[in-house]
Image: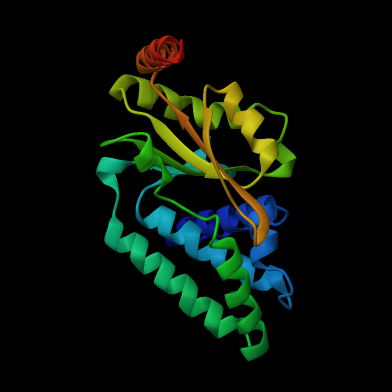
Amino acid sequence: MENNRNHIIQTVAAVMADSFKEDPGSMAMMEGIKEPEKLFMAHTLLHSSHAFQTKSLSILDDDPRAFIIGYDSIHEKKFLERMLYMKIIMKTIACLGLKNMKRMVNNMQKVGKVLNLNWYREHIEGRHYRLKVIAVDKALRGSGAFRRLITPVLEYADQNRIPIVLETHNLSNVGLYEHFGFTLVKTITHPSTEIIQYCMIRYPEDAAVEQKELERHDAKINLFAKN
């Protein structure tokens, strides 16, 4: 059992590291850092172990090369989330020398200008599903793994009538998520960095129709007011 747990965590971490190493946000965070792959792998190991511990990790067909990390907000473990980020900070300090640590702090300050995990509060209240990561190993891409990973989440959200929220720093992901019913509702930018945070929401099917009707109604009222 322990060997299987370690295998899952190690595999998920490796796939996550490979999938996000060219992500604009990740690249900006690691800019100028010596041996960034080593630190990035240390970070993804912490993330995968945390996801396994909190049961927010789902793998496809018992194969950890394709997985999703996310959770219903009613199951959010805020204390463990804070502990995760403390571990990441401690691991970063342990892995980097003074020179690299200064660069990392500078990178974090720049990326932090556009990194906002609470943006969704401007658009929704209460219960929601937070989609953190979907990753598929290169060997499995084109097999429909992404669709099979995300479909149960969409069905769960529709059944419970809750929205799904996610953020990405990769523009190419926006169209992919729009294909599955997500809407880009906000972009976060800052003059100090070229990184952009794209904030997306998918409303449950019935609520999505209601939301569109409300938006059309508001648009008519605004047009009437202008005239």
